[in-house]
Image 1 (cartoon, rainbow, N blue to C red):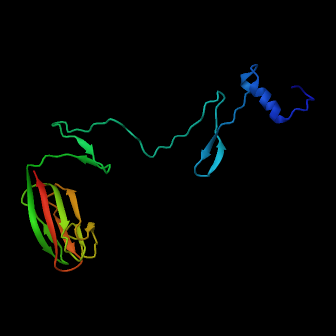
Image 2 (cartoon, helix red, strand yellow; image 1 turned 90 degrees about the vertical axis):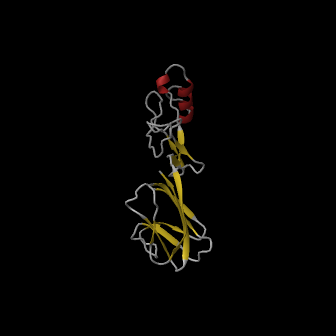
Image 3 (cartoon, helix red, strand yellow; image 1 turned 45 degrees about the vertical axis):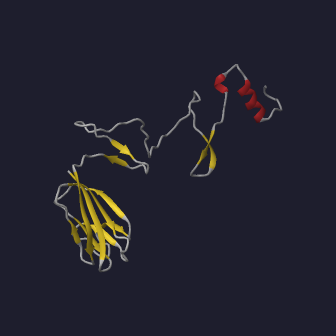
Length: 182
């Protein structure tokens, strides 16, 4: 289409696009959805028509990776909740039975070197238990977690120099303790 033609701009662009004479003149609009602005936006391309991309990564997915202890065949696993678990060998278990606790923190002691500790709030408790270090309070200050009646926590814990304590919001509460021992 030459000068003086009454063709519309759209017709001229279409003719340039359809022409096989000069591929440099072809103009193709590529659009993508802006999820933040909730609108279609034109995507930037270079002279060769290649899409320009700024990659912002928040998560990286890696498949088929094995994490294993170099000295043994102990391997890390992912449980059904998506939690990474690293296995360890325990040579024994130690149960502590039912322990009475009130508004003053009680140390959960064990005779062996622990690998994993479990604390369970008794089903008949009327108050809440708090678990933490020696400075945990019956108001929950310095607690790592709280346990309503019937609930429990398992802590992978190998630091016998820093004991675990339990305290209650009310007098005459109970908890059960146990551990896997190395």
